[in-house]
Image (tube, rainbow, N blue to C red; front, side):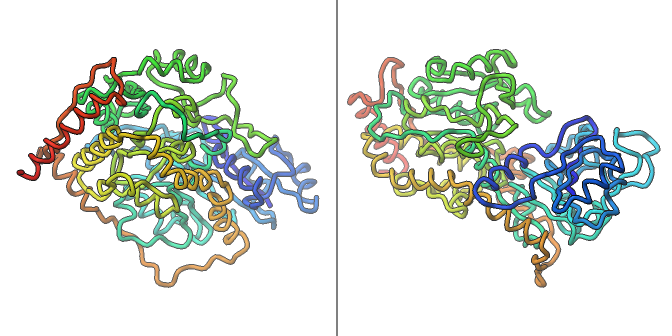
Length: 523
């Protein structure tokens, strides 16, 4: 086999995290792509001939200039494009603003000659048609109707036939997936890649439900976004910040829409005592402490664990590591995912809670819990009201979710709650810890196209963009200035020197809840 994993024009090597995914899969007996036996170099024709003459050789190359040396070989030829985007060098934002992207960040479309106006640093001629299989991987959330056009005819993007192009995609906006059947050459895995990487980043964690935990909750919210600012403001308005371990950082490094949420910064002082010292150092050295870099290269942080004795050449994101002492000193978690609404995209934020055996409430898109359940995980409907997951209106859903935060905070005996839920929490931990469970569907998908056993669905019809009711509602509210009132929840003021296990505080909370209930029911 010949495997081309092209370097992008600005020199970024590829693949990156999907290489880790394949290493993890092979460590548990899966196949993925075969291991390279003749590694990349500045290939000459004689070296290519020698490599091809070697029985069973697997040849890897990354430079576009070497395509002509390999493309006429009778060996099976595979192109692997990690972090593959559909693009026209511009990205359309929901608020109607266009801003230019760097075309060198993306893989170029086929072309026979260089563009009249130079737009990138790729070769003049771009040709993918020589490959027997093109594997496109996208670990981020997919946005925009361009993806629907691509899924309907991916071969058109590469100048080849669509049966030679397969796509492995994580989450996507609901208008792409809603009422659509995906073609046989698309694999959707919204809860797989990030969960696998987080599992590989953390050593097995000890768990003892008998821990005495001084803080009711943790809400490590990350960069400020709409859902995270909602959570922070609710905790602040209800005077709950001092009762948990809370952090939210200014969003100063993203696109234009995030400028709406750039000015919020808060960090519980206790966190520096619970956090890993190296992580504290990294945080203090980046962006004036407001943001933790998307890498752990440069600090002595361990890399991805492939198995008990092997680590990857790649380092995880800093955010992949479970804050062990934060978990040991708090009872439950508040999760505010990266994509705020209208998708099924999950990241390390949810993965860490599952791996760390946490009870949690999530502030994100509609049907987030349903997607987790469909992936095999169990949630907490036996102890809290999870009907918030079905509410299409974002503000209503998040307010309903916050009621469940209050419900958990008010629980008189959280230790007994965790004992009741321990079987469920252990199950979630075992599931997300199983790399074979997570990655086998990807391997099966790839092998079916390599060995020719994949069969097209005769009943498949082209996809179309279908907006969900939740998306229509948000659009209506955004442009008609419709305001949805928050539920009537009475804040309970708790002195910063008092803890929630104080009987007087618990009594005051229960009294306030009863009064709120009476007002709602008209009693």
